[in-house]
Length: 80
Image 1: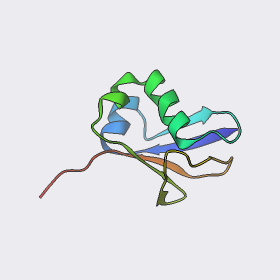
Image 2 (image 1 turned 90 degrees about the vertical axis):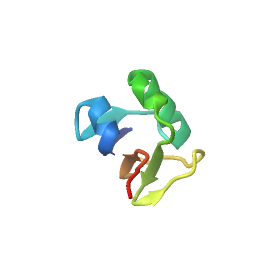
Image 3 (image 1 turned 90 degrees about the horizontal axis):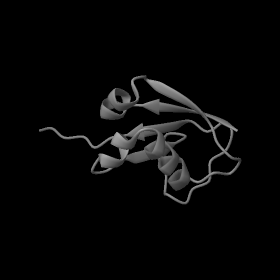
Image 4 (image 1 turned 30 degrees about the vertical axis):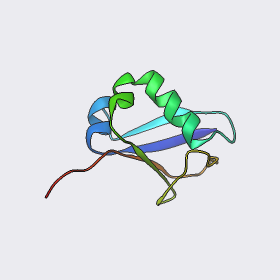
């Protein structure tokens, strides 16, 4: 299945684009998607934390993805 992943902040800088299209196996988990992304973009694995949102809600690592899911990588945010 194909997924479009929205990238924000440092994740956008690491990948070099505002979004990424990936082909992944049907029913892939959020955790497996992150592992695949970290293999393609090792700098993603160096981030202290990286949240994944699916359909505008934070997703647990074991959540299964479906074809039309809206996926976003949300890097750590700091500020004051």
